[in-house]
Amino acid sequence: MNRIFSFSKCKNDLKPILSICIPCYKRINQVRNTLTSIYETNVEVSLVDYEVILSDNDPEREIEVLMDEFADKPNLFYYHTECEGFLNSYHVLTYAKGELLKLHNSQNLFRKGALRHLLDEIIQENTNKTLMFHTNGFLGNKTICKYDNFNDFMSALSYWSSWSGGFSIWKEDFDAIGKIELNELFPHTSVFLTQYAAQSFLIDDTPIYNVQRIAKRGGHNKFKAFTIDYPSLIMDSYMKGHISLNCKNSILKDICTQYLPTLLFNKYIVRIETFDATGYRENIKRYFSEYAYWVAWINVIFVPFRMIGRKCIRFWNTSLKQE
Image (cartoon, rainbow, N blue to C red; front, top):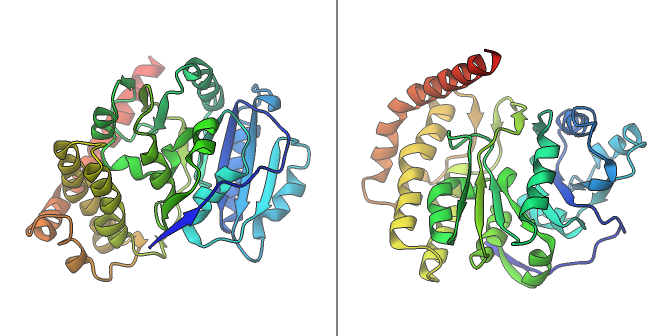
């Protein structure tokens, strides 16, 4: 289901370069660690250059006490937001006033130097208002690549365009959107896909975060999210002519052969995630081939080998740095 929303005015007068926008729902320890990584691990960055926005849609306001713990940080703002679930990823943006609005997952820790890296990049790309996406090394190339069209940009991103932690948008572009139809599970992607006409595009695969693992993650139907909701957004982008048929098909193929097998592996093989899978076998038929259900299961075999490969690459890169 999609919802219609329009932009609301911000409540503070700070004019920073960067707004770190963190939608929150409980997990107070993870949020505390994340704030610590921003303020203590990146202490060399001036507080006037950025702001941190906490948008909390927990009725019990569990994380509000962190405002007392970080009371000495004048650029930290807390808002209690009355919205459902993932729609908080949209609402948190409406409170921000930075030149660039950057969504940030509450469990991702900033590495040392990461904040300076982001600020330098914003300053460099400000003139062209480059549409930027940060993939944190997940693409495997750990490089910064530029594109001159949205189609090539989306092809390179593949299904990672769904990741809220990589999303950013210039405030002036966000303000210009006005009313927008939001997908309830991917509101940030709904916003992101409106930016197809940007002058330039950039994917930064530099590892800038360390992820705090959440034991037995679950809750919503993530299988439906990546067989119905997210593919529907990609299909809509294709139908509007913003991406090509090849790009659309490539993204769906990657979901079927890479993302869904990993989800299946984590839920049914190693049992480290508990996401709901109700309707999965029927849902996958809507946007994927008739054999997609079995293709995804066959590709589960390769998941542990990909994981080992990524660990070997990280070990190799670490060894090279130490030398």
